[in-house]
Image (cartoon, rainbow, N blue to C red; front, side, top):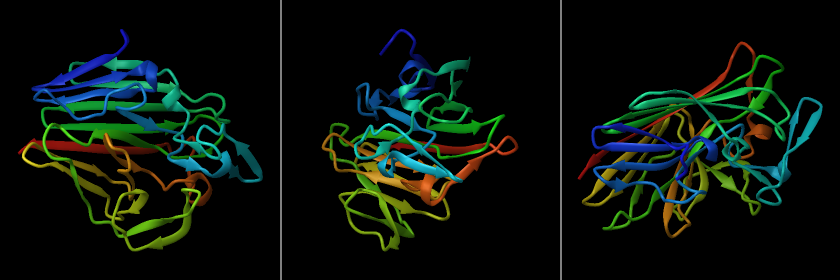
Length: 262
């Protein structure tokens, strides 16, 4: 943790935000139980202005092809804002607003805001991308690293997806939708009625991840943590299913995590 970290509290719940580390959540505790894997690369970070991998780091906007840095060679991954310094625009006891101005290597001007709102039994994250200049394709989402184990049995994941994006050998969707397959996963699933995933640490805690978005990436191939990532489109979505930010229409998304002790 750095001196610039901001801690919000509500009852026995506590969340720490790190504006200088990509507006990452470094800590999320309830009743003294830490839910997120610790470390500068972990916690939970916003994925913006894209989510997951961009094939070969290139995406097309009309006739123009843009090249992003290959930070997960041969692809670009998880946006640029997680590497940036955000600004705290408003901080109260249990809520705060943070902003980030998009900059190189992203080729468009725009502003991202993230609102963090903590309750005793829930955390709501809201993100928006605005532009006052040219329109551009974008995505937004979150990448939490939930601890696989809280001191008892390993976490169990429960969700009912309508489809799974078939994953090619390059770790990108092929464009085919298939019936959901058993894990382990590093896969994107479709939930047209909204993301709804439950993580249960038996005898300890149940946490539900909800979002109005219809895509979620589930990653559980790591020993220490599992990831449940609600997002506005699938991996490589800037190429396959672009959503445009315009001066009249920002891209807005939200997720709520609610929990209860067992």
